Image (cartoon, rainbow, N blue to C red; front, side, top):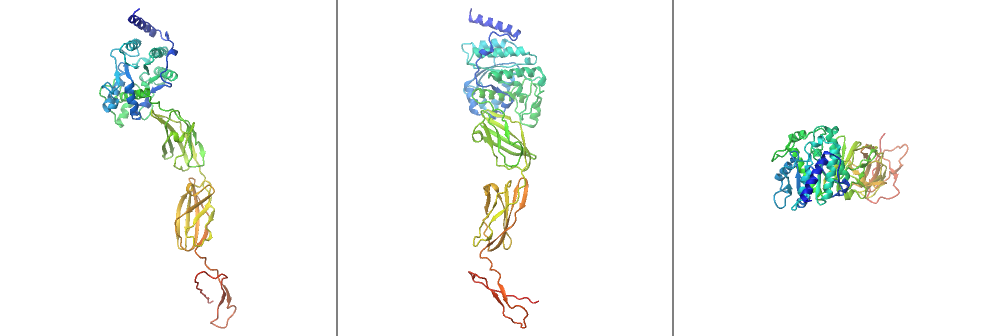
Length: 511
C-alpha cells in the first residue's frame, strides 16, 4: 500500500473515530511528556514586561510555529501584530532573528477531526520544519461532551508519541457566558486537568479573557470581553492593526502577550511559582516587630511581603529567596515597628516566569503591654570632675524606647529618646548624652515607652559634679542671753580642710 493510500485510509478512520467518541487505537499512555511539569499560559502571563528578553530571543531561535485556527483563534495573531508594531523584540515572519509563524489557510479548527489529518500531512512532509503545533477551538466546546474532549486529548497524546520532536499546544475554548455551572466550564476544566496530570503544554484561551490585568475575575464573561472596554476607559490601551474577531481589541492584545509568554516558558522560562503558605505571626502577639515566616515555594527567586493595618499598607518589601529561605521555611524581619492594633499579611513568590498567586491572608493583633518604670543605677552622689557621665538603668520588659531627662543647676541639660535596641543588652541600658555638665547639683529621670503607650517616669536620682559643698559648721558661741551688742562668734570648722581657697560668712538674725 502506498504512503498516500495509507494516509488516506488513516484519515478516514480518524473521521469515523470522531463520530464515535472515546475510541482510539492508541492509548494516551504511549505519549511522551516533553517537560517534567505542566507548561501553562493563562491570565497570569499577560504582563509581558515580566518576561526577560533573553527567553523571547531563545523562543524565536528554537521554535517554528504551525497554527491552525478559524476566526476566534485569529485573536492570538491579532495580539501578536500589536506587539510586533510596538517592539521589534516580538517580531515574527520578518526574516532573520524573528519567529517563524505559519497559519495554514482553509484548515478549519478543532471542531472537525480534519485537524488530525492536516497536522499529520504537514509533519510528514519531506520539507517540514515545524516543531510547534497549535490548534484552536471555535465555539464547539460549549456543546461538546466529555467523550468528545477525551477524543481530543487522546489524539493529541498520540500525535505527541508519534512526533516526539514536536511540541503540541493544548487549548481551551472561548467564553460563552454560561459561567462556572455551564458545560463549557466543565469541558475546559477537563482539558486543564489532563494537562496538569500529564505535564502537557496549555494555552488557556478561556482563562486569559476571564480576568482583567488587576486580577479581577469575571466568571460569567463572554468572548466579547465586556470588562475590556471598562478597563480601557480608565487605562491606556493599544489600537489593533487588524480586526479583533468577535471581541474587543484589548482581549486580542492579552492573547498575543500570553502566547509569547508561553513560547518563552517552552524555551526555558520557568512557570510562575506557586502559592506560599503562611505560618506566623498569627493571633495575638506582644511584640511589635515580629518575624514573618512561610513555607518556601519551589522555583521562587524572591518574595514580596505585604502587611496591612487599619490605615492601609504598613509594610511592602521584597526579599531575595537565598537570604530569607535557608531551608524549607522562609522568615523575614522588616525594620518597621507596628503600633498596637489588628493586621493582616500576605506573601507572593516570584521568579523569571512572573509573580505567583498571593498567599491566603493571615491575621494577627499586636497587643504590646505598657512597660513599667525604669530603675536608675548611676550616676548618683558626688561624681567629682566627670562632667560627661554615662547614665545607667535597668532594661524594662516591653520597653522599646526610653526618654532620658537631666536637669542641672540652672535648667534642664538633656531631654532625648534612645532605642532599647541600641541602648540595652537585655539586662542594663546606658546612654552617653554628649552634654558637658556644669559644676553643681543635677537630677535625672527615665521614662519608658512601647507601642502600648507611655510607661511611668522613674524615681529621680541626684548627683553632684565638681567638689562637694562643705558641710555646715557647728555654732559654739554666743549662746544664751547676752548683755552686750557686739559679741564674738565662734563655730567649729569642718574636719577636713578644703582643697581650694574658701571664704566664710557668718550671719545673725535679730528676733
